[in-house]
Image 1 (cartoon, rainbow, N blue to C red):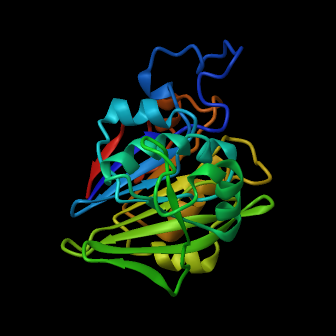
Image 2 (cartoon, rainbow, N blue to C red):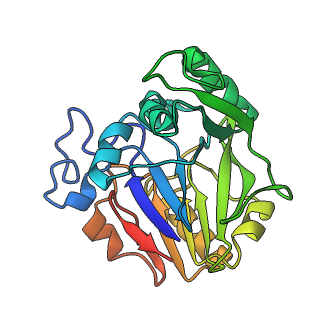
Amino acid sequence: MEVIFLGTGTSQGVPMIACDCEVCTSDDPRDRRTRASVHVVMDGLRIQVDAGPEFRAQCLREKITWMDLFILTHGHSDHIAGMDDLRRFCDLLGAAALPVYSTAEGMVRVATVFPYAIGERPVAAGYAAFRLREMPVSPEKLEFPQGTIEAALLPHGTVLTLGLVFTERSSGKKFAYYTDCKTVPPVAVGLARGADVVVLDGLRPEPHPSHMSVGEAVGMAQHIGASRTYLTHLTHFIGHGDWMARMPAGVALAYDGLRLTL
């Protein structure tokens, strides 16, 4: 299994507009964060999770050339705004609709923002087309020859986010991706147990009403007990070098362009 972090930043990105703080002016490329998304490859099956405003640039940077399905964790702008650029992958599929999985709220949001893209085929050459499907949640799962995708609902302010767990059939490798959440409920903790890598929302040092703080995320990482945990959706309050030095064993900060082979 391969995991590519296309982005690891928040809705504002880092550097932020009109900010000259130490992190926003940092020379460390790991402090340059586009909106959070991840690309997962299970035995050749390519799954894209979320598409923020920089999605096109992220794909060009990381040479993403194919996509079999798309999962939207929730309908907030920093996760949905780049979905129009999925049109190229519809072209590559032979002018066919791309399967798009989300929550009920997420599907409504996609249909509202991209009404021209809902259907089995693009309305014209070069347009996007989305075949909307509600993501099954545990104990149900998506089954593919290459592996399974399981989901649990995570609290995120007034909406619920999809927490996703990918298990590759050939290797048995397991990857959990839990972005944009205030906590990880017991069912999601259970799904993540035994994962080779877990990714958790770790917004900033101070508490936030709809995201886990760094301290909360570290505590949850230790509760889940994976050998490797990465924090994502990071604000400009977190400088990579400084905060990496503070992380306990087994916990690290993700950064744009990070590639993991499980």
